[in-house]
Length: 385
Ligand SMILES: Cc1ncc(COP(=O)(O)O)c(C=O)c1O
Image (cartoon, helix red, strand yellow):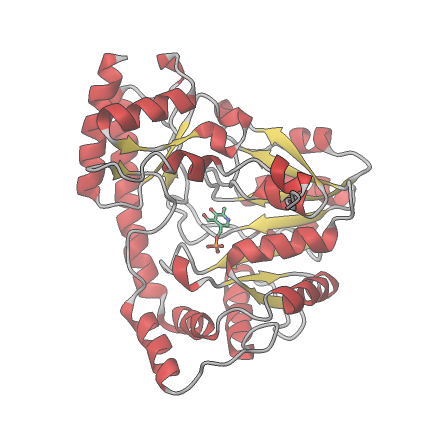
């Protein structure tokens, strides 16, 4: 049989996280600070709402755009947070996680060869989904000395006549960096000047610890040119339910819905029912989980700095991104040796872009006792380097 796999797919690099975690499979007594997933189960009231809906026979497709009730609740939720109203009928689409929303957006806005600007280090799926959509990802390396925050000057310098959009994620996976309202407005002003779309992935917005999260859609220069991505995976501990959403200009949402209706049809109905319950009654559980993450963040940052791994305080998400530069190992060598010698799994910074070299990502959405043990193993390891 001939080779049916396209060159595009052959040339697509495998995820640096998955590749690394192949090593973990089969190893015993490993503490994993690797995968970015809450250690909490979905709050019971949310599970119960879904179970009850199944008992009542809600097992069908929904509208392509998603349950109207869920879109109405999302519209209210965004309005409360940002004072911006998205019409549930035309400006909100329910997707299979933020992952599908991002993919639909890339395929909707990019013609072959058009560019999408992405500050790095960033979430692993961004560049591959741009490539799969036929576009060209343009990475901007952010500076650790500036807290890995994109500056308007860096954004300006990356824009060409092929640039269609900028994709920003805050609080950021993997660095935890976030932005003030003024910083966001300065970035949005550059996008407006060049008539670019802003894609804003705010999946960790609820997990912002020291200040209030500012949604991009609130910035005057971002008004009407922003696709806002959010979902239920992280703050509500609902990774397996696969529910996300996108709010934005009606014509782009209509384009995305076209692809979604032919490929996904709709997001799973039980997940959508669960998401309704999360928005109606989920706030106390989110607050409780956030308090736990906040405590763990302070604990792990203090512990890492004590060991001598220079670690800035992340403003949000559930990751830390300490520097390992002083040990003279590449981030992949550091992670491979830490795993084999001390059985602690963390992710090489290069999985999130070349400028992640010299750093590793640790997810602290794990039990605090495991964080304590991991820190003591990391200390042993570093003392030998
Ligand atoms: C920044 C970011 N965006 C999107 C996703 C995907 O989320 P979902 O589970 O909603 O597809 C993740 C998951 O880790 C993420 O870190």
